[in-house]
Image (cartoon, rainbow, N blue to C red; front, side, top):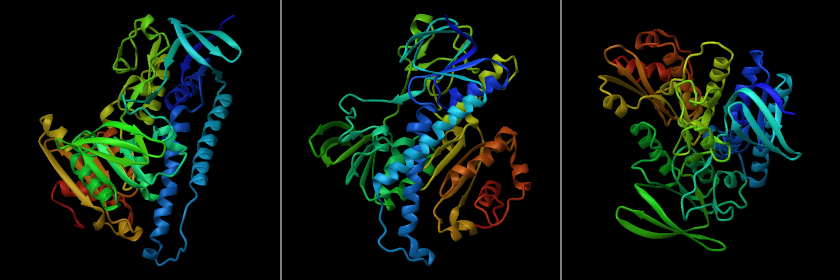
Length: 463
């Protein structure tokens, strides 16, 4: 006999479990189907464990700089196995927390593989057999996985994807990272900090290609200073795999060269998990491995929604979570606001950190805005100097006619925390006037946010 629910969520990643919790808070009977781990890729194999690894690298880097702070630290080293163990422990702790939240909110977890057989009907293959589940509403939150290019497929030995890189079988000595998006550059930063001779190959004309060009250029300069080799407008054409090395054929500037590495990380994007869940039979449209939805995440089939990475860009956990809340509230009869992609920040936790929200300078010009641009360097901020982090910049872009904050872009220490101030400003439709009149505490890194706004209008005080 089929179990019946008001809402069934397929996938327990950030979007899925948040949708389930919010739906339950609104008085709906909810189940969440997950084939692998509660918390999905983000908590288990993505956002959280990578940040744990990067924190270890950050502390190691600070220890190497001990004398800059008047401190002594001898025989500095690391144990990669223990660094990884800590990362896995953090992931396990948070994944276990999802189970507690499900129990607290009376959500029924079902471990298995789901397929939607008809609107409102789902079959689930579990360890115990096949279960039937019915629901008035179904939320698809199946996430995404690493893209694999022909000839560059990971094998877990010398060629890795992000999962392999999170539990590395060895410490790379000479590392090639293919792709300089958030995933690629974070792993490049981690292994480079721990001593790997790191080369990053990016097919686009600059690293971190989705970021503002000025921020990308600043970040590249810092990566190069740290010893990374950055190859832009370049492509890895093939990988010749040996027992203890990989010979990469790299094409750049019309020339081809063969370079030897002992480890390769492929980070060339993601594809949505759309296979095997019945989308084609239901007539749900899929475009380039992502479910097509409207602004409220509706698929076009009544009662079926798609959220998070499987529903397309931006591929961010916080976007997925917010969509989960929105859809749960929509199902419950409330009137939530649709997602505004331009007010969702992107954060990259390399060294230095990069964060941004809204339009880049080039995009603002392309869209026809008359703009005012402000910049403020970390070297002009007392807290940044006291922290020993003088390398960085904050850039703000305003509509010259209305004062609307069109975009904010940052590179430097802790900018992934600072960016939220500008996100709140955009949500409240703040203009330059309110930001100028806001009193920022001293001494803080946040003062640079104020100064960047002032600079856009020729009023910067400290630089």
